[in-house]
Amino acid sequence: MKKSAVRFSFLLLLSFVLLYFFFRKVEWKEVLGYLTTVDIKFFIILIFITPIHFITRAIRWEYLLKHEKKKVKFSNRFSGYAIGFTVSFIFPGRLGELVRPLYVAQKEKMSKGFVMGTIVVERTFDIMIMCLLLGLFILSKPLFPSYFRAKEEAYSNLQLWGIIGVAIALFVFAIALFLYFFREKALSIISFFLKPVPHKVSHKILEVFEEFIQGLKFFHSIGNLLVFIFLSFVVWLGIIFYYWIFFFAYGISFPYFFLMPYVFLTMVGASIPTPGMAGGFHYFSMVGMTSFLDITKSQAVGMTIVIHAIQLVVTCLIGYAILWKEGISLFQLKKLGEVADE
Image (cartoon, rainbow, N blue to C red; front, side):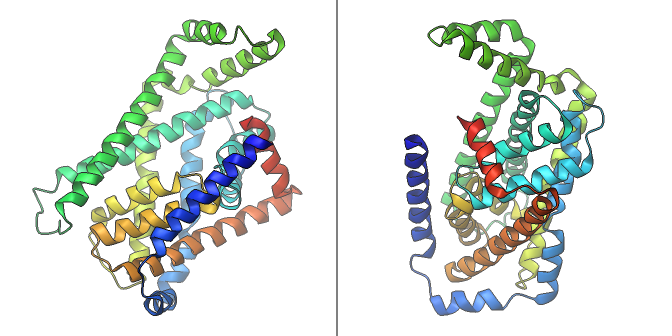
């Protein structure tokens, strides 16, 4: 309980610090103006296409889950994403990342450890695909110099973030490969570190790890791997399209691919486990707009508030509708995630 309170306090403080830098030195009259000057046609389109990434992610997830169960209902996969993102929006610590696999595991009567293993694979490939797209963007700079108007320092910082992302993704990827292809060796190493732990507890932990490793069966099929990589591109190119439409809502037109730095930075910000992504998403969205898209800070702040509000409201409405239909409370899911996190 104490550990949870300390973590919550830290995340809350981090959120306030990031929001301070987000709101610092803005013209409030301009910000308020940008909250209301959005084109209503594009605003409505954004509302309807906000949940599309749930669909593309749910389709992709099937290629990880089918190694234990051939037919996992699309509705459960979609609901898992909607509920998971809702929990992450409402509570700190990205609890939705734990709730989603546990929810689907319960609905489909699947091994919890196996489904948790698929989340590691999914997140690793998300980082790798976005870093690959970012790398292609940076490599294209000499080909279209007139479009790259940001300061050289901004591109250097972006490249650093990209390198860090690739390093993290490759590290997690290497661990996942080791766990799967050297299963017995991995389990023996885990057993060694669990020696001081009571036998009953260590045995349970080893069981969970064995189930988790089973969730990495995905690596055994080259065809399955290629399809998953292709669908990962579909997921992220769809997300870039979503933000492209958002900028049209403010009468701002950029070449589609030139939104790559902005989307990459919003991914970095959204990965910070602050309550409701507050602070992390806002600050990095503002940085992306001002550094790479030549948008004033006041406009960037106003636009970021609008896009975050659309995502939060639409996602939570869908998530609450699913929970209401199934008779599950949000706090039941929160508890489920907290138990798994301990």
